[in-house]
Image (cartoon, rainbow, N blue to C red):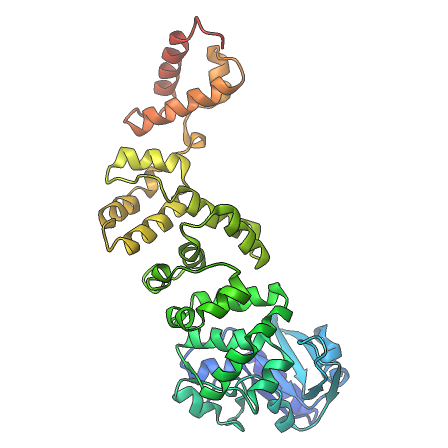
Length: 397
């Protein structure tokens, strides 16, 4: 028996009290059967969108996708999507159907879904019209009905098949796989934003290495628009399971301008791209097992960025950087930037330094002094700064 949260039970009870049929559908049921705790829930019902809104008239509702039958209801400060059973036809833009018909029969609604493992429903007992529970047990990704129809309706399902195979560590069933290979070029019709969502999940999946190996040529041609290194793919399971680390590995040793262009085309956020660029930019830095030298590197390289670099180096060079990683992990509390100094530019001006680059340069020298053992204490820093000022009294400050 699937235990449901109170807010979901409230929604089910309200719909049933008003004589409507309703089921929990999709990922929540799949995840529960896999032994996971679902993160969110979706309901499917024979009530029309207007009827759903009437049932939940005392709740805040959002017309999320009311044209296609979805109303979002807020219950106990939780958002719950409730969608009317529907049939679809005429996918003229390879995503949205040109015609949606609201229906009363859940059987037809389930027939339009993507994979058998996503078509299992629950309300007091499981409803499994497409043998999805058996496919879960056998770790199989299988399209509902004819896979070519499912993929031409919405080509993103091609990438979703790979994503589920990666995240769940499942095999793609033969006919479904053949359709993936045949219709992969249709992903050119899909928006990069939608591709980004599936790709990001795929890359941190348990089976990502096998997926990248098996579909490398297609992924290069239609997704990355970039050559992927076999050497890097072969160790992708060994680095930290973090999207920045995984993507940095795939683009390692590549031209930064090309990488930036590729990631922008894939609609990754600018902040994410900057993280990748910084890993590639500083990857060539010499990193040694010496506290002072590593702290000097950390003046330039962000702590998290250096951690990713060390992870990649240690993986690619078979554990040669383990000592440096151990040192790095013990340095977090000691990492210093100019802003951490107990002295600032205003203090230097009071000493006599003129505004300009000399202020920054002096603060950099003081930071080096602290890294090399000078106490990060105001009086000590001012004393040292005065020495630097006296040394350059004759220069044009």
